[in-house]
Amino acid sequence: MKEKSKNAARTRREKENSEFYELAKLLPLPSAITSQLDKASIIRLTTSYLKMRIVFPEGLGESWGHVSRTRSLDNVGRELGSHLLQTLDGFIFVVAPDGKVMYISETASVHLGLSQVELTGNSIYEYIHPADHDEMTAVLTAHQPCHSHFVQEYEMERSFFLRMKCVLAKRNAGLTCGGYKVIHCSGYLKIRQYSLDMSPFDGCYQNVGLVAVGHSLPPSAVTEIKLHSNMFMFRASLDMKLIFLDSRVAELTGYEPQDLIEKTLYHHVHSCDSFHLRCAHHLLLVKGQVTTKYYRFLAKQGGWVWVQSYATIVHNSRSSRPHCIVSVNYVLTTVSGKNGAVLLGCLVFLQWMVISPSGRHGTAERDQQSHLSFIFFGLM
Image (cartoon, rainbow, N blue to C red; front, side, top):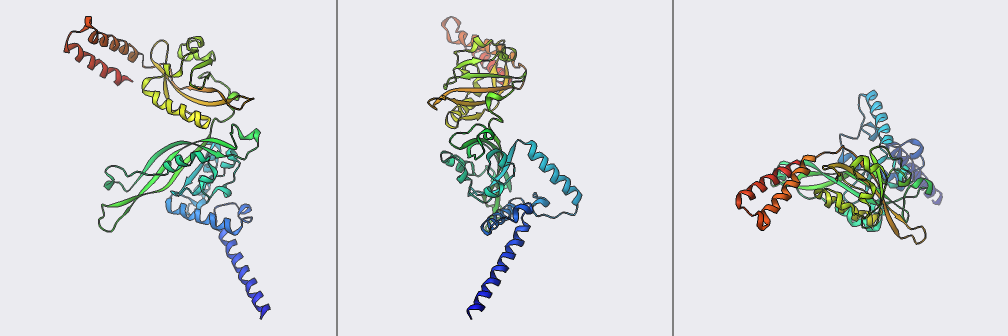
């Protein structure tokens, strides 16, 4: 009887192992990986795969289990997708509303040293800095749109910075702090409406997933970036007071380095862009690295150039305290908006005419000022 029970248990285990083996073969992963998976990993990856099929039922392709008749085109698409991931200099990931990673591309290992199999199906909160948990929760929170009765599905843009665990060797990890690396994530929340029984026009909106691309910040150590003709570098104190600028700034903005030293960066940024720059400055002080949004840097002879900055906090080698800010700045346009600068001068003059006792002439001048103000801000 005892021997019979042992045989039954062995047979059950063999059948179970066989089923798990067949299930693993169905996963969209190389056989070299699936053959090494344990049962818990197979269940975790299978669950994530099924969630992905719900969120993207038509957009997964053969590599995600959808068999198409046009096999030759699928091969081309799969190969193209592989090349796109390699040229992306980043990784793609999809996160469920509860924070579980439904999918992450294999290129995550290049930036974080963590494998696709390890990350998929686990909570993203396990791999981000504890101080960034609230921000991640806010990113995954959806808000119902206006006029929602007419929208079945929509997307909400997301752009944020996370400090993610990095286990790469020091020479390959780039800039890290405490085992975490700053990753710039940009993508969208996919929101879908689920109809209620009472009315076809009423429904409940639900976040079904975050789709994003993660980029390391910056691509290499900031001190090792080769400066091209459309780039300049500056060093600043922690309050953004400029300490040093390289000579390229003169060609790009008209300012000599000595014109800008000891002045704050905010003094030379278009007022409409100062709020975004301030937000980026705050993120930089908290997380150590940041990529700014595009902003307008005022040129010496009037007008502005559009700039994007990659900034990094440099720490004191002895005390490990934040020492200064180093920023590599990409100038994206030539000088533009000079007419706006001329109108600004006229506007300032008219304000003096209206406000000062010697220049107060009544409502006609005020109307002219309002009209000119409208023209000026329309040019910005």
